[in-house]
Length: 632
Image (cartoon, rainbow, N blue to C red):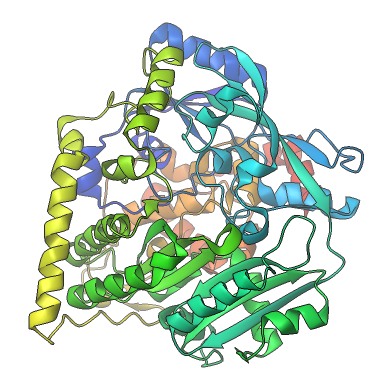
């Protein structure tokens, strides 16, 4: 078991962050910095040992893997250990044909699992759009994703899970075990998921994707209702659609902007995926609808793994994620658009239709600019307002983490919450497992308690919503939405063109800044896709040397923050293989970034020859590097 004592404030900061972009002064006021050390277990027994040790010290345990969620679920709120589970990643069953199932450790990524199953002729029932997220992470947070229209929630695919409870004991439980439910979507607050047995299925013989255009959302709803009446909504043995996904006109506009040409019609659209469906059945389903060229449908199907790519269009991307009844969706979207217009915001809606077409997972994306602090805070409030608005239409947030705690009752009504709270107190009386989240206030400072208090937050949001509704009725003048255009290219520009960056400069003030690096530090999605493919991270286990970590470092360097020599030297632990560039969601030119970053670091901190030689020697003899080469 590898335990890293983190004396560096920078590394502590990296291990305290996730996908969310919270302004620095808010992080300091509300969250502080609670990471003491990181433990990276490679076996279940090491997980047990870590939890037992934490219990003796009465230190908190915050579970973490890829940190590819944006709600703060992996953010430590109480001093203790970060339990980094990425290295608990063995796939234990290599012959799924016998039982149509596979056993995996919790740190296994969905990408690795898919790669293992494909040569054997098998595939997963459903999987997340974040392909480099982990099995344990998705069980503990989300559960709806690709093919959920047909196969439903991930919990339906679980035969059993193995957990380490807060007393350090291992327990294996099937989906029929009464305790099973307490570990699904509860973000590691009841214990740590270490292994899971997932159902798998034979790969489909054929797959077809279609993109259908509609003139209004009402037409989309009518289509879904007709689909249901035709009884083509699939069961596990039928051949109807496996997935249905809706895009509003603004989302289609995003696709065109990212491609640099108007290939998609700017209208309402459904992307429908079929497996093994006969041609006449597909035509029956899609009768009397306008269809886009097949190659465009296939492009969007490929892009399902890059939901954060729109961040290339701005220097920030926020999202409200809500589960709503389909019958309420039109009313919700109408009110959401009214709210957006009065706030000068454009919303890009990406909606997954869930089993039986009764509910939908609505993701409302807001392009924003992190550098413009006031407008960015305005957009953060808009996300909360959209989540609150969803409640008015029988909706609930997709997850809680930290930032959705004011809406806890939408997910856990009073009776249900009491049951879960009772179980939490039984198994974790000291509140050491991911404290400060939905089932425990321990670890929250006074300001955070006030900020998350539903008695304060919900009435305030209701007032904001009413004011915006009132303004929209009495005035046709709305705030103009900010224009976010994709970067035309990554070129050098004069330092005078930057807004808030503080790069080492010459006396004449005309030193050129590294525009590629500057753009990238704000365009990085922080999704963690770079971690599984990075040789430096796999060998050292230090997130600072990954692409995500280096861009966090670069952001601080460009902003003129104080950094120490030891952290800066780690930047040179890089093979320049560009594997991170190949999997980057926002398609950043990371190879160029590292050239620019190393140049800046060398000027300020020097060239660490001994560190580089030691790193190269370590890589050359590392079994993890050999494994990574075999994977590629």
